[in-house]
Amino acid sequence: MNAYLAEFIGTALLILMGNGVVANVCLNKTKGQSSGWIVITTAWAFAVYVAVVVTGPYSGAHLNPAVTLGLAVIGSFAPSMILGYVAAQIAGGMFGALLVYIFYKDHFAATEDQGSKRACFCTEPAIRNYASNFISELIGTFVLLFVIFYITGASLNFPEGSATPIGLGSLGALPVAILVWAIGLSLGGTTGYAINPARDLGPRLTLGLLGKTLNTGADWQYSWVPVLGPVTGAVLAGLLYNALM
Image 1 (tube, one colour):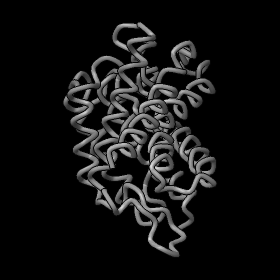
Image 2: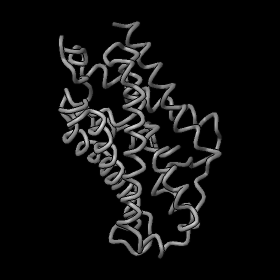
Image 3: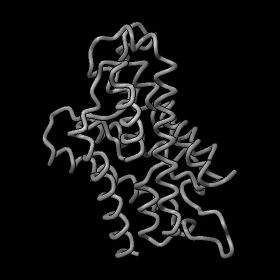
Image 4: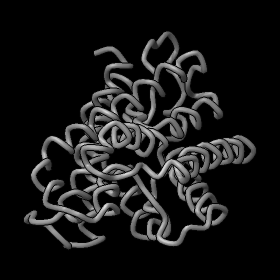
């Protein structure tokens, strides 16, 4: 499978399963309505597991522009491939969000609260303070990348002659799933822990296209936080890792 196609499929799976659990918890008349934060964080962690298992052998299963950028900063990913990976990830996020809408269409129709419907696509803060929200996303993503660097260690480097970039797929899916679960439980309560620009921007774009159908705005005023916060956190994690190593 082509690496870019793998990133598209993997990110779509990630969003289908991850935003799918948010829809299951937040929308009216589902079997999982109001089942809570533990259910959401657990399913998001295993959404990562599912996506990494499928795409790891083909693209390294970045599934996240922050991961792609962080790997490039530490010299473990070719800069020439960044744009293609990020485009595939965002497109995958958009498609995954569309699948969530199709799957839960009747429940979206049964839900009046705009915030609950919007949460099934993108993140928003518990308390809106852009500076604090930015720092939350920065720190959460910093932890994600910094720990990934140390889990993978030397295996992040390209094997000589390899055409396929090695990334998260090289370590097996479970450690990363546990890491994402821990971040959600410990650091996710302020902003919903996007820690992934494609996870937020892709579905937010889909929500923008479906806004009239769902009678829900995409909250573009906040949209820069879950993009720039994770990007900044990834770069800082890479710089510190390089300095320490």
